[in-house]
Length: 236
Image (cartoon, rainbow, N blue to C red; front, top):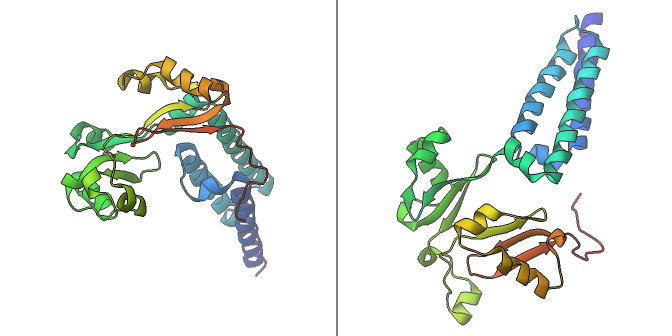
C-alpha cells in the first residue's frame, strides 16, 4: 500500500513539474516545435516517466536532469532568437516543393516525402488541383504553406472596388534581424543600394530593421525593432 502511495505522489509531482517547465519554456513549445524543442520534449518526457515510476532512481538525480535539460533548452531558445545563422543551423529553412505548378521531386526526396503525403497535405489546404498552385513550401515545423496562382485567389472587397492586381510574384525577404539577406538580393537581382535608399528615405538604418520583405504586389513592408507600441497586447 505504501509503494502505491509513493508512485501516486511521484506521478502527480512529475505531472506538476512538467506543467511548470512547459509554462517556463513558453508557448512555442506547445505549437510549432523546432528540432531542439522536439528533442527536449522527448527527453523531458522520458525523465518525467522515470520520476513517476522508477523507484530505483533517486529523486534528486532526476530533478537535476530535468533542470539541466530545461535550462539548456531555454538558453538555446534565447540564442536562436538573437542569432539567425545559429537559428538556420538548428531549425533549417523552408523548402520549396512546388514552383509554378511543377513538383520539385529532388526536394521531396530530400525531405523524405512521398506524393501521397504531399497530396494529403494539399487536400488539407482544400487544394485538389496542382494547376492552382504557384508555390508550395514545407515549413520548418513540417506543415505546408501554399500560394495560389493569381486567377485562383479569393476575391476581396478591395478587388471588387479597384480590380485585381498582379499577385503572381513570390514575396522576397530582404532583411531579417537587422541583416541584409544578400543571397535573396542576388537571386532576385535587387541591388543592396535600393534597399538602403528605401531605409534612408524613412530616416532609418539597417540596424533599426527587424524584418523587411518585398511583397507579392511589389510593395515594400518594413517592421522596425521600435514599433512605438506602448501597450502590446498578449492574450493570457
